[in-house]
Amino acid sequence: MNDIKHKPEDADAAPETLHQGRWLRLRRRGRWEYAERNNPGGAVIILAVTPEDKLLFVEQYRVAVQKFTIEMPAGLVGDLADQQHEGALIAAQRELEEETGYRCSHVSYVHEGPSSSGMSNELITFVRAHNLVKVSDGGGDATENITVHEVPRREAGAWLMARAKDGYSVDPKLFAGLWFIEHAASFG
Image (cartoon, rainbow, N blue to C red; front, top):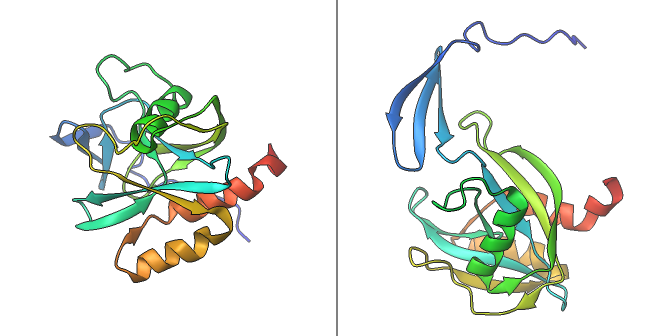
């Protein structure tokens, strides 16, 4: 196997902004186009298991894919005007309660990686929420219409595949999240 790695010649070219939106900008570096988040902190996905051993999933309509999606609770880090410098762990606690109505005593870091490395520079941090307590109905903020699903952990994979058969867009990162829930303690 050849271990010599080469970057494309234009990979280090100065970035050019093709379009600037409220939440995203379209950039070009050499011949490579990609999306970039305007918030500096990326995104966070929350691995949340209730005391009854149920996983928390959220359902909402996503305009970009023109479908209702099933996802884990998640959100942008530092996207609020008074929270630009918050970290992923604080954002996770805020988003978990806002979307699902559950509060947790603390969150722990699990893993970080790109959401779509060929299309975006966005990094997603997976965190695990601990000691969940139901404090409200959730449902998101005033701009969201989120349905919360509590699914027994042992049934989660089958439940997700059934939602896909029903026409929902099931975020593939959910399956990474399920793996992390089962195995994260064994590597860190």
